[in-house]
Length: 337
Image 1: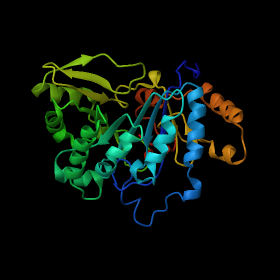
Image 2 (image 1 turned 180 degrees about the vertical axis):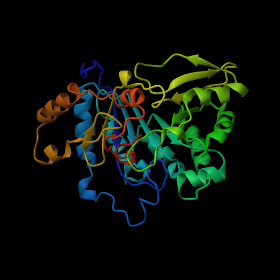
Image 3 (image 1 turned 60 degrees about the vertical axis):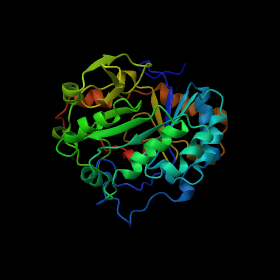
Image 4 (image 1 turned 30 degrees about the horizontal axis):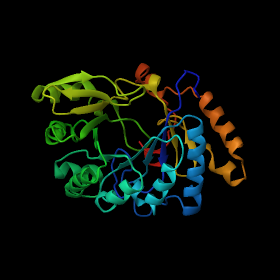
């Protein structure tokens, strides 16, 4: 088993298949920066399906069993089901998932399922249309996302996880409504503390609503109890409704860092490997591939990167919350969440 300097195994690979997105969520890709004139990566600077499949095969040999396809918005990548078909044929990959904003999902859901996708995660920051419009930066209502959740359920992309990034004074007044709406449906709402991902979302610690506060608000109406993790390194802390009608999850990277169990590695759209969501720089795998590197060369490179990994950004942030001069970080739309 390949482990890093802290004994953490490499088990989960997140692949950003595009840096483009049809939303402009302020916490990820604010519209005032990523306007109509913003230049995203040209096609020649993006990993091809063949390059991705080759790399995933090598990662699988090194212990990767879980793949998550992200973006940007992954459904904007042309012929994505073709890539999924290619990935499902790789020995060792036993879980293939995708994270999407859901806006385009209804038209692709059946094809994604038929191509081998196991499960799906859909972002939905509020059921309140006015709040949702502001948070997606495009004025879209919740209608298409809610329809996408229904469609995904009907084709068997379940259990569906619904991600909600919680910001104080923005959507925190709607978190109980979201829990109430999906309670008893089999879908799992996961509340995510607002994180300082990237450099352009204006993050400040006072905008964070803690996981404990979120639990307290929901528990006041719908009693909860803590549940055990499903596996080592699970990101979300699980809580069950005491009446047996389902569960929710809490991702508390700010107030309860989980660096010690992190098993995730990320591959950016332009082929760089990142060993932390908050990393400043990645190491290119595209360059050696296109320079003629063998599989053994790539295996050696990836092994060296992970075995020397010492990332624990969230723990360090928690221990020195007011320390200035945080390093410049990769933007979330480039490596997925």
